[in-house]
Each structure stands twice: as C-alpha cells, then as structure tokens.
Length: 331
Ligand code: ADP
Ligand code: NA
Image 1: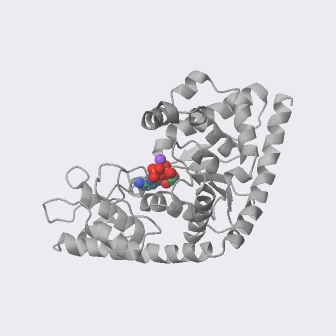
Image 2: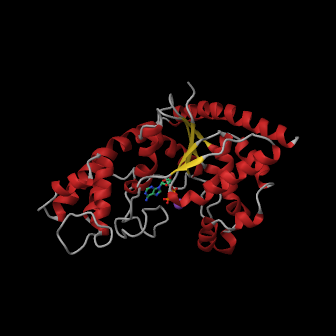
Image 3: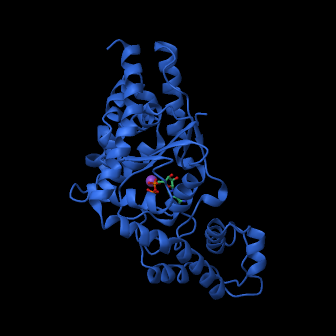
C-alpha cells in the first residue's frame, strides 16, 4: 500500500530550533511519519531571501538543522530529510510556475508585505517576492497531499493550490492539489517575555525564547523568569493570564496531560512550583534531543553522507515530476 505524501520544511536561518518550532513542527512531524511518506526539507534556498543571511555559516546551519530533525525523532528509514539546494528541480519548477503566476496575485501575499517592511528597500529582492512560488514548487514536486505548516502559511498554501489547479486546467493533470494541515491551538507557543506574540527567531531579544540547543541551566532560568501576572492561580485563560496560559500550553504539549489535569495538579500551589514543574518537563524533553544532536554534529561526514543519500531519493521523485511538467509545457 502506498502512503500519501507529506511535505514540510524549515529554513536554516538560526543555529538552533526554538521550542515553538519543536512543538509546532517537529513533534507533529514525528507523529505523522507512520501514516505518510514524508519529505522533510531544510529549505536553504528560501534562507537566501533573508536580508541578513550569513554565507559563512549557512551550510553549518543546514547540517545543524538536520541533526535536530534526527534527534527529535525524524527517522531516515521512514521519511526523507534533505537539503533543498541539493535537489535542483526545486528552482527549475519554480521558474515554470513563475510563468503562470500573476504579478497581482503574488503582490497580495501578506508575508511579503510584512517582510519587505522589515527588510527595507535594499533587502526587498525579487527572490523575497518569489518566495511563495518556490514554496509552491517545493510542495508540488513531491505530489504532497498534506502540508503541515503554521496558520501564517495559509495564504501560501492557497496560492499553491491555485497554481496547481491552473496548471492542470491549462496543460493537463500533472499536479496533486495539496491541503494545508494546521496545528491545534495547543501547538502554538508564545514568547515567555511577551506572551501575546508568537515565539519566533525574529524576536528582538532571546530572553523569551527557549532554544533546543540551550544548556538546561539556561532553559531553567528563562522559564523561571517568564512573565506571569500578579495573581497566584494556575488557570488557563488567554484573555487575562496569557503568561500562565502559555506555560500551561508548553507543559501540556510536552507531557501530554490535559489542561484540566494540569490545572488540578497545580491548584493551591504558587507560580514558583508551577514554573519549576514546567522547567523540569521541558528539560526532560529537550535534554536528550540536545545531547543527541550534539553527538550527531560531532561526525559531520556521517551527517553529510546521510543527507546525500536522502537527497538522491528526493531527486528521483522530483525529477520525475519535473519531467511531467516539461513534457506538459512542451520543452
Ligand atoms: P520563526 O517564526 O521562528 O521564523 P519559522 O517561520 O521558521 O519560525 O517556522 C518553522 C516551523 O515552526 C513552522 O512549521 C511553524 O509553523 C513552526 N513554528 C514557528 N514558530 C512557532 C510557534 N511559536 N509555535 C508553534 N509553531 C511554531
Ligand atoms: Na517566520
């Protein structure tokens, strides 16, 4: 029986994943590997669109991300994990898709508008503008049916679906039309210092971010210093207790206990006890991941060998799709 295809990826734009990526992406991926033929990409071509990317560290960041995927439980026997630039078909398909993408529809992408404001006139490149088309190519190359992403990607998934349908209508049934799979409420983690904004590597300081590769003592300190409120009750309420609620989300996402059970567990206890328990749970989860990632990184040649093998498998699938596309458009 062939399994449905799944595609997802993360940019190698920091040395370490943060807890939001870990809970919102890696934990979801790990749980989907048995059900899907999954392709997990390290999207370094996308990383080139960041105004501040560093050529001296990009390859190492890709390798580091691969180590974290593996350490978090992505299994190369079940899934394909590879670096995007190792598979040239991504850029080749993106070019073809460019020719059926309306300038107007690409101009409506809100992520481009947000990023171009942040990056300024000089950082706003054609590559940044074209990012969603490359993302469409990523997904369509693998005939992915399911794309687990954050809900900030909904507009890009919609564009991908439109391009697939438009191409199929004009040139014949070549592409599988994919669907986004968006995380449940509990998979969204917020900044520990500003629990109304999403934990993100673009935060101004890293005091509110937990990095997967942080030392456990640093993780503990950050959680103990997390913003709460002047009350004393551990209760789930985004409206009046965002800090406490975010910590509850983290705790329940990692331990698997329900919010009601967690509230009961901490009833009558202070925030100090609660934070200690959250820190214990996060450290128990991340410490083995960190240790395993560092161990994998101590043998970069072995990691590179694994990535090359996986890129070969990804290329086989991608080349077959690209051939269908080229045939369909008559080149
Ligand atoms: P960042 O916002 O730090 O730049 P990315 O946009 O690179 O993170 O996200 C990579 C993956 O991690 C995506 O699947 C995204 O949905 C997930 N993710 C990012 N931040 C969070 C968060 N705070 N909570 C849950 N999932 C997140
Ligand atoms: Na982002």
